[in-house]
Length: 250
Length: 189
Image (tube, rainbow over all chains, first blue to last red; front, side, top):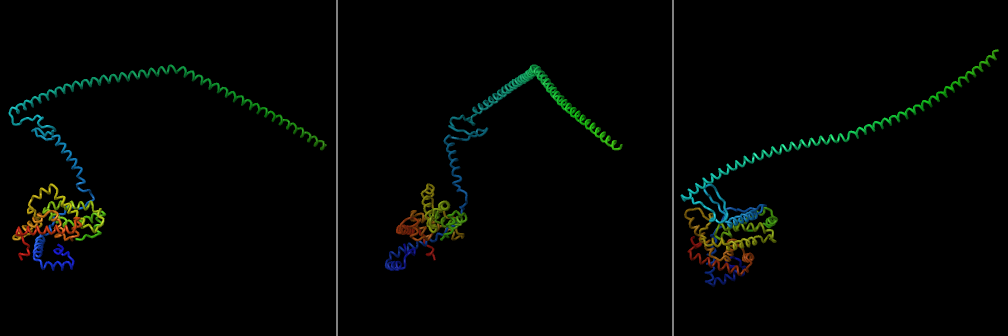
């Protein structure tokens, strides 16, 4: 195989070729191998249709969708386990779980069943009308009861407010009656006290004024006495001087 | 095909542009390996995309950037084997490989069109005759040009085992081609 693919060293190749020259069966086998290789070489490279892969920073699709696919598979499995199904009944879609044989299915092709279905529909309509009528009656009765109750409540509330106001007024009057004498007495006492204090204050002022006046009068009297003495002294002095002068003139 | 070491390192760091460049370079080779393995475009595309998802997720674990090429071949090989063993794959294996000649191999031209597609179909069918362990070695050797020691490293086998399996694979193909009277273009000239 090394010779066939050119992987022999020079020495090995020469030795092998020497052996090959004398071995026809080996030559035949080698030729067969070469022919097979020629055939294989005819198979060209294939050009891929498209390179679908490219790298992005985002996680791979499997990582992104794997958990979601798992949840979806679990939901589908649960729906299958509980025998979930969708049914079209002619009036709409029904989503149902459980044993389908347990559900009542109306045979659409049966004439009797169609009649029964029609009468059942009429019955349903009648029941619906009755129910609506009863509902309206109930509704009206309840509305009346509610209005009556509301009126009673309003009256009660007004009466309560009136009573409360009356009690408040009485209480205020009582407080006035109880507190008025005390208040008058307090005012009188305050007035008397103020008068007494004022009188004392005036008396003190008068006394002080009198003392000051007396002291001033005494002081003025003293000054006048001194003044008089001075005048008298001065007069004596003048007379003495005049006497001396008269004597001198004589 | 050699891939720039710096490109691998940048891709390992998670650079989007480097990863996309890596994918662009290697998408076609990977796709062709898978296509020759399965003879099925859809499964080839699936495996290719899986391979690049693995690359995106596990490239950081590759210690030696220079080992990227062989690491990628190992990844693709494992994915091919896994896909072949899946239930879907088992169902598809019963199909005729002939039905899966890719559109891109259909060469325009009224006379050669049928011959070309027929030869392609037979070669693909011949590859499908081989056991998986021989087929993947043959693909890596014939179409990817790996050395025996590289294939041995990818598949974690001894070189002798690789050579032995390749020998038996080629011998089976030769018999198949003789039985279908399919001869190389060389003999028509």
